[in-house]
Length: 367
Ligand SMILES: Nc1ncnc2c1ncn2[C@@H]1O[C@H](COP(=O)(O)OP(=O)(O)O)[C@@H](O)[C@H]1O
Ligand SMILES: [Mg+2]
Picture 1 (cartoon, protein in one colour):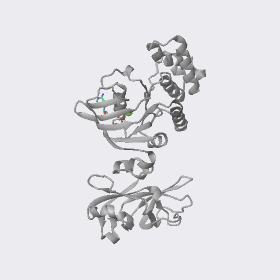
Picture 2 (cartoon, protein in one colour):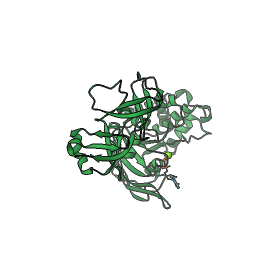
Picture 3 (tube, protein in one colour):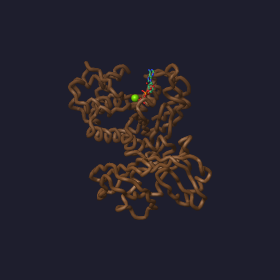
Picture 4 (cartoon, protein in one colour):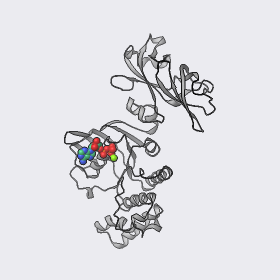
């Protein structure tokens, strides 16, 4: 049982700042996911927590204990590496037993723990095999089992599913979530895949270039992204952005871009008034733009004229790629019955309850 706290943690490699003033409190038994593009500092953050990398500045706590100077083996943490790092010359059993032997556990206890973990992940029949005799999915399970046997307070997982094919990945995702519920330990999970992050995390921490952008539940990240980076990172296809300005008086405050001028709903204008005539970024998700022939009932519809450049029939939906007469491109995710065709001129429907406005200069959400 342990919470984890990063307090003003910075990591520099020479002059390069890999993690920049990270502050985050992870609750006991939480499933927290670090997500962000490659190179944003995810692995470095985990390695500092595990004690595999020094902290340049700041403090890391596990529970109440400051662990900056504590050796990795005393931290009550186990980590699954992206590469799995199984010992090739040892059997699965030996791989799992190894850390327990180092701790001086009895043969009997080791056997009991290995068998219990193997049962938990369904690999009992693989215990005598060598890693090279395993499929990718089986190796991944062994790597997870190797952490379970240690019964740590905190599990760290660094992109443990990235070597699996799409179908196995979905299955392993559910397995790890289930394991988290069964073990009641704190899980800190790293991925660059936003779908993994959204489906597994109770909270998600989004990093970019070493800087924490937002920590929140999946719902809040999707519905209330605090800046342009988060808005563009979560959701696929990504949110559409249009640069423009807020114009007009209170009663008819509008967003004006090269592509359109849309009147904003009156109840939302108060927040925006201080930003009148200043440059802003207007964001709207593809799923909030509709084919005019298939508009969901009850939405605040606004028309935007565009030409269809391409469509992708996905079965359950159609993805439309559109261009406005001003050459702004955007993506719409429309009803599967849509008959939009390349070259059609369409008055697309923007849902005016579902947009976001960001300050251009800071890229922060205006609320
Ligand atoms: N040992 C190191 N020496 C120098 N630079 C490093 C070292 N480890 C990581 N970096 C750099 O720090 C940044 C963050 O790396 P990392 O934490 O591995 O990113 P992520 O796991 O998010 O892809 C990258 O730009 C990487 O090149
Ligand atoms: Mg990494």
